[in-house]
Amino acid sequence: MTRVFNFSAGPAVLPEAVLRRAADEMLDWQGSGMSVMEMSHRGPEFMGIHARTEDLLRELLDIPSSYKVLFMQGGAIGENAIVPMNLIGRSGRADYVDTGDWSKRSLTEARKYGTVQIAASAEASKFTAVPKQSTWKLDPGAAYVHICSNETIGGVEYHWTPDTGAVPLVADMSSNILSRPIDVRRYGLIYAGAQKNMGPSGLTVVIVRDDLLGHALPITPTAFNYKVQAENDSMYNTPPTYAIYIAGLVCQHIKAQGGLAAVEQHNRAKAKLLYDFLDGSSFFRNEIAREDRSLMNVPFKLRDESLNDTFLQGAQARGMVQLKGHRSVGGMRASIYNAMPIAGVQALVAYLQDFEREHG
Ligand SMILES: *Cc1c(COP(=O)(O)O)cnc(C)c1O
Image (cartoon, rainbow, N blue to C red):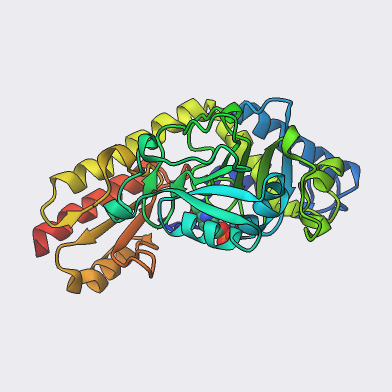
């Protein structure tokens, strides 16, 4: 068996230890005689798995008891509608900060449910930087302010937490949740699809402050009503049980590594290795403002783009896959989530060096 270095933006690499454990437990989960996939979501075995996954998430992210943790379906793109359906009703208006492809998709969808104002946009920088808070025009009557904490396609990440006063801050953290410690108390709501840093696709984690529940628009589908899901421990409908189990194993793995502070150090070391190389190269470049560069998704371009296919084929031959940039921006992108080992980034940098020497 050979495992590649998988730089996919998502679904993405998972810790090998987690996959091995899941393989060991596939046919018989801890003497139950069943796979987790075969368990009733209301049976004692799965209820335990579900509760432990939530406890671990609460512990790792230091989630206060005044927040609910919901395990939902629909992904972050589903949340683009589910968030306004649940929250915008308080005033009918919401502020969105546009930092790139994902935040744009969020605000476009939200327009179906209320009045959306773009409080700040990264357009002036061609989406290569997070707009400084001093430029934001916030509406004090907005029901919430929405940001995307890490633009998975553009490679722009917030390394600070916006201050939105009494207006709840809502963040799409799909591609950087669990990559470093955060202060959940600064947010009203956090949502994230699992398939970047938490587990397989199919699970969406929503962390929501209690006082934001109960304002859903009447059209909100019951299965997507946060209050209903909170009252039913995320079991109003059948939750994505196997994905919850794997997310629990990922959380255990993170805890065993020393928690999110240790994970952040590891992620910073990996990103530095790659950005330092790109900054010193005359053949490859990353165009994002230094202070806003993503630690998770590193887009880069070749000086001679006619070599893109040659570059990707050479990477594949060295066991490095999924380096092609998103179709909307072209170029390359290395996603270096928690589970990407430093050896993967070292192998990539070594390849970049060799490629530059040969073609630069
Ligand atoms: C991947 C991603 C999404 C899309 O998630 P789906 O699971 O396809 O709904 C949305 N936002 C961000 C920031 C992402 O990284």
